[in-house]
Amino acid sequence: MPPTQAWDAETALRGAGLRVTRQRLAVLEALHERPHASAETLTSVTRDALGSVSVQAVYDVLAACGDHGLVRRIQPAGSPALFETRASDNHHHLVCATCGRVTDVDCVVGAAPCLAPADAHGYTVDQAEVVFWGTCPDCAGRASANGASPEAGAT
Image (tube, rainbow, N blue to C red):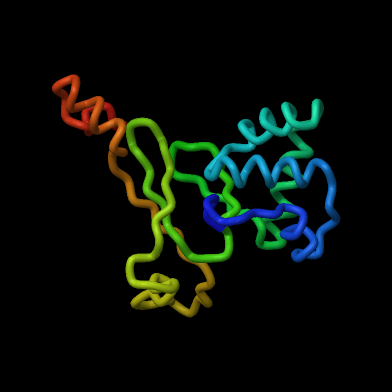
């Protein structure tokens, strides 16, 4: 669910059949406000909200919510695992090779077209992950202002 839409973590948890706890609410609300956040970021934000929470507790919340379709885990190359609450569709991601910023991008053709590979080799495909790499507008602007090509900072 994109962060611009109304979000009610309690309703989402109940709808998924999960118990509503302070930790689950805090982690989901932090994640909804910070799409593509790492567990480290979520732990910090959750600690600010609750006063105390372990890293393991945050991972446990993310795992339970992932198992119930409330959270999606992505891991672009060279990045720690990132999490998002937009988990119910087959969208893709744009990643800036310079700063690591991640942006959602809808499927180009519509509902999950990439789930029909030319040859599935007998697999039943239920998910596809496409990551587009490039340079975000902020990094491209900084590179232009410095007289460098945007790719100069890419690794």
